[in-house]
Image 1 (cartoon, rainbow over the protein chains, first blue to last red):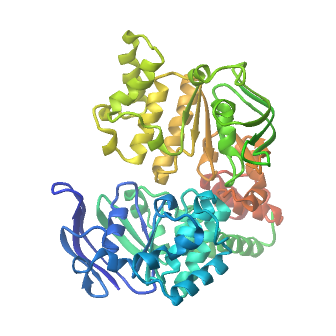
Image 2 (tube, rainbow over the protein chains, first blue to last red):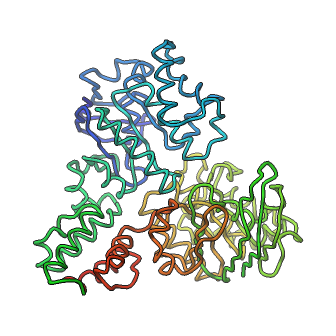
Image 3 (cartoon, rainbow over the protein chains, first blue to last red):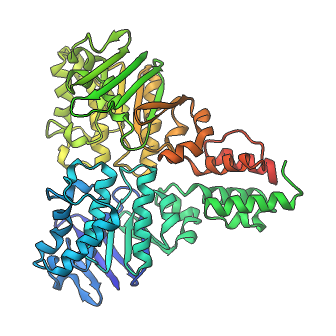
Length: 280
Length: 279
């Protein structure tokens, strides 16, 4: 469990970038942190994996303060996927990259080798390939795989889909979804509300270094005041659902007013058309 | 006007062409999006427009790129860079000085702009980008979005005829991305400047551009106004170009024969079409 208790943070002694932040993330949750540039999301991620220590308050991982754990020790529990994979990849072959976490922490064992082999098989990587010769999507997958191979209980993803095309986004996000289904806690910073709506169960909204809302994904994405305050662009299907419900009292009583996904909206519209006696 | 004719380009280290027989016309003063999945050749096409291809990146080059009737092959890179300003995806690779004002001066002085015009151009460009207050700031203290605006301002001050930008919203949140696209459309309209952006996604972009060019495996798949291109959302999604979900929804309902509404490009249009069909 991850707990933030009245956390304040700053990068120098004067400017505070987080102001009394409180939240708890249970094991196995899938949480998206959303908010505009400079809202404090990346700072919060750095506090979770111990790269930054709070100026006031406490960050507790399974009841232990991050101020009392070495950052290197945290790394085996909390995996961190950077927005830009090139800031993460540092080895000359895919196999070395996947082994890097084990060798850096002195855990090169048979188990480590078999984990690396399993991940190479699963992702279909060429083990001797030079990571920097892979395309951007493949490098992002390699960076993700180098975290998965370590089996951390928490994975932090900082904008995992930036720089990827539609097919790359699907590939990365479906793998993350499976990771979460297997019990890993996923904490994701994401600007794309379509991805948030598709994958996250809970959303924490930040603005100017504060948590301004926290709740189930679809409750949050349907709150106009939160969307406006945090300067978010809502997912299109939810925006459409809300607009239709606000403009038609009849539709506000149908599944159209409750549709969150493209499939749900398509089915709800089809139902409504059928109810009206066929298509126009 | 930009006219690309039968352009095929193969990088020296590759045995496959990255661009194949590309034909494209971009009108002066328009805002155009070049979109495609990873590896589709869009950055290569961008560099064919800004002259880096063929002058810096070597390979087999067939066909022609004309910028205001100047063939980029026959012209040197200095002359092309006076016509075409380009903004790279990796903004840090384009920053050459440590203070915003120096960054603005760098291009102006190197282009030999008369001294009595420099101050006016700097003030005007910073004002256009809404960043006058950043003039004295150190580049190192700026956010990614602010740096991007400084670089665009530095290029605007050179008054190029064409502005090309590689993924200008990669570092920005959605609200800032919308502001960026709005600003680029304004630049095209106000200064009759031809603005070309290269992007992977058309969800936000399609509301702002006059022309959308979709590239796939080095060839042009679609080249039309956004509404026409968005008719093909199924094909676009298949190659990895995400479309607005409101558009996809309406296209699916139309294909299933459930509604008879025109292609919509945003939520407001989809709402109006659905209200007409079902409310």
